[in-house]
Image 1 (cartoon, rainbow, N blue to C red):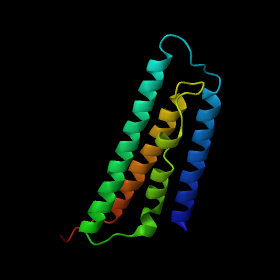
Image 2: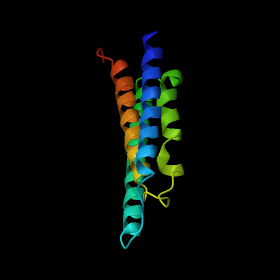
Image 3: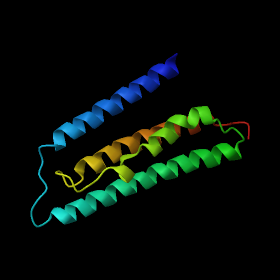
Length: 128
C-alpha cells in the first residue's frame, strides 16, 4: 500500500510542477539579440539532464544484472520517466527560449535519480 501512495505522490508532484512551470513561463518572451544564445544554452542544459538520467538508468540496470536481481516491475517508473523526459520532445523555439524545457528536464532528472538511488539501495546485498 505504501508503494502505491509514494508513486501517487510522485506523479501528483510531477504533474503540479510541470503545470506550474508551463504557466509561469508562458508570460516570458524570447526576443532580442541574445535569444538564439539563450535557446542554444537551454537546449544544451536539457540534453545534459537527459544524459544524467540515462546514466542513472544504465547504472541501475547494470548493477541489477550484476547482482542477478533485475526486476522490470520496479524499474518501470524509472524507465517510463526516461521515455517521457522532455529533452527529446520539447522545443526551445517557443516564447520562453526553452526555459521550461530545461526546468522540466531538471525536475524529471531529479526524480529519476532519486528513484534509481532508491532502487539500488533497496536491493543492496550486504552478504557479498
